Each structure stands twice: as C-alpha cells, then as structure tokens.
Amino acid sequence: MTPDVLVVGAGPVGLTMAAELARYGVPVRIVDKAAQRTDKSKALVLWSRSLELFEPMGCADTFVQAGVKVTGANIIAGGDQIAHISLETVASPYPYALMIPQFDTERLMEQHLNALGVCVERQVEMTGFTAADKAVTAVLRHADGREETVITPWLIGCDGAHSAVRHGLGMTFEGDTLPSDWILADVHLDGVPAPSDEIGVYWHADGILVIFPIKPGRYRVIADVGQTSAGEHRVDPTLEEVQAVLDRRGPGGVTASAPIWLAAFTINERKVADYSAGRVFLTGDAAHIHSPAGGQGMNTGMQDAINLAWKLALVVRESAEPEPLLGSYSLERSAVGHKVLEDAGHLTALAMIRGRLLQGLRNHAAALVFGLAPVRHSMNAAMAELSIGYPDSPLTSTAGSHHGGPKAGERAPVQAGAEPVGSGDTPRFALFAPVDRESAALIARHSDLLEPRPRPPFADDGVWLVRPDGYVAMAASCDDWEDIDDFLQQIADGPQ
Image (spheres, rainbow, N blue to C red):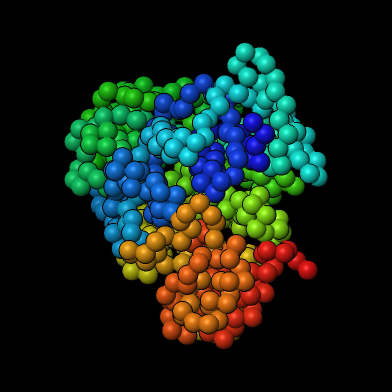
C-alpha cells in the first residue's frame, strides 16, 4: 500500500493521528517497532477537553465507560487541608478527570482505528527517511529483516521521546533533566481516606506524595526521593520502600499490597523549536516532554494529532492549499507545548520547596490563593485544558465588533444536545449565524469547507466561524460577510 500519510509510532498519539486521518478518508499506514501495545498503566488521565474532542470522533462514550471519574483533588500539608480543588464546576459535558490506564487507552483507540479499516503494523521499524519537495522516502525494516521502501507525501513522527523521526530531521530536543529522582508505584491500597475517588496531594517536609485512584482499590503513587550520585541510576523501588514513603508522608493507615508496576524515573523538560519541517511533522513526546505534574502530557500529544489531522486531510483532499493550514500547526501547538511545559515545571517546583520556613510560607500562600474563587476557576479550566486557544494563529481573525459569544481563537462552547463540531467523515468549519440569504450564499460558495447548514449563533449581534477541532477561527459582526468570505477563500486558495 502506498499511503498518503505514514504515521510512525502506535502509542496513544499515533493511534489518534491515524484514526482521525482514516475518519476523513485519508489513506494512512501506521507502524510501530514494538511487538505489542504497552502493558503498563503509564499516562493515567484523560481531561475534559480531550473527551470533548473524542465526541466528533465517535468514541468518547467508550472511554468514559471504561474509566473512573475523579471530581477533585485535596492538597494536604502537616495534616491540614491547604486546598480542595473541585472539577465539578468545569464548564464541560465532562466535568471530571477520567482515570484510565494507558494500556486501556491504547486498546480502545486501536479498536476504534480497526473499525475504520486500519490496522497497526507491528514489529516494523522506520530506520531512515529522506524528505524532498514532493514526497518523503522512508525505509521500513520488518520483523523478518526484510526492508521496504515507502514513498509517501507526508510523514508524521508519533514515536516518543527517543523519536527516530526527530533524529532524522536533526532537530535539537532543547531543555534539561531535573536534578531529582522519583518513584512510581501502581499498587493496591487499603485505608485511603474518603473520598477515595479524589486525588490526594501531600506536601511533606521530605517531599511530595501524590495518590491517584485508578479503579476501586487500585492507585498510582508518586513521590520524589532525592538525588542519586552523578552517573548512577536509581533502581526501581521495592514495595517496602513505597510503604515507607506512604507511612512517613501520607495520611496514616494506608497499606500497599499486590504491586502491578514499580518504577524509578527522572523528569525531563524538553521541546523542539519547530514541530514540522516541510512534509514531516512531529507530535506528542517526539516534540515535547515535561513533568508529569498536571497529567497533561498524553492529552497534549493527542490534541496535537487532532489539530494536525483535519488540516492535513483538507490538503490531501484538495479542498485547501497547504498554507496557511499546515504552517499553523507548529505555531499553534508549539505555543501550547511551551505553556504546558512551563506550568508543569512551576507545579513541580512548588511541590519540591525545601526548608521549614519556605514550606510554611508556601502553605500559607497556597491556602490564601486557592481560597479565591476566580483562581480556582482559572486553575480548573487550565487543568481540564479548556483554556487552550489560538489567539495568535494565522487561522484566527476578527471582523467588526460584537459583545457576546466566544472570542476568535477561543474554544467554542460545547452545547449540550447539539451535534459536535467536526463530526462526520469530512473536516468542515461550522458557521454559527442566522439562517438568511447571506449565510446560504456563503455556504454555497464554500461547500467544500463549510457544513451544509448554519448553526444558531452564540449571541444575536455576531457570526462565528468554528474550525473542525472546535476553536473559533473567526468572530465577526452580522454585516461582515465579505471578510468571512475572504477568510475562507484564503484557506481554499492559499495566500495571494
């Protein structure tokens, strides 16, 4: 098979990428050098925005049914509650964090991909590629040693932190490894204080302890444990070492047993400057890795894939020119990656403050700040990834003035009972506008790019153009039809 797109890497990001391309009718191959999916819990959280974006894909309910809903988190220091963070106020149909082990995320997304007629080719390693103006030539090595040369218009690296695609591009993975060691335990716990469906964050003089519920009786435990000497590698912890950390830093009375996965790790904060080079793109950990604080790494990567897929599909289907669509991918997602890396780094630094005086000041300040409703609202939106937007994108524009509704670049409100924007097998923009002669004429002129019918506007004094991934591309007043027409024409024909 000669694909229009070759996806390298079949983790959550690669599977999402291939599934979205397949949904849009783009011929795609997805290869992975591993013999099977991961059997580790790894990334645990699916946030509200990711679940919203799964809706038009048609798989949101499947994930929700397989996961455990976590509606809040408690920050405890010295036995006192510093803050309670509730996700139930998040303005989304999914006001919670969905806890689901990565092996289940991969299993469900692969099933979704298979239902679209695409299977992962396992034990197939991309050993090199050459990118030219009109195509990419990649070499694939199969399990029996056979080598295959594939010529494809587009190559996407979803192959993780040690990405062969990134190395092939010669891109620098800029950043640092933090000078601290951490332990992770996927274990069964007894005696976890109620409510057992909330995340427990314990700030202790020795360091941080976090307990995440995975499913009834089973939890993820994470803690920092100091530093190893230069050149040494900390061995994976024993169950006894995990229990000792729980006893010293935890709420008391918590007993660990039946470990499923015990691991030691360090935190890397790294990112490429550009997520694309010609016909080659990077997504997920191939482009950015950061602290697990906030649990946003996998979500960010899957949203990278969703962002790129509709743009690439429009280009492959010849409904749009490559620019400005494909050029917007790196600009948009690199800014998001930078913000996620920055925020996760700040949370990690806050948790790792040492010294009785500094820790006391931190605890006092945190209690005051988290006591403010606007702060809690802002933090919830950031954690749920609802505050992600693209105000500075070349695909974002404003015309005229209006007083209600979302601004250009923002996530469009998800309306209960309405068909999700981006549904179906063709990536189309949604027009939120009155049903009148002007909207009908615009849809007729841009039938390849627009849904066939307008949707009710967010407010009476405006018109909104919403991208297939649910972000506002253009906000305009009711008499700015020419500007909207010009905007869509630029996407179809490219810069003139």
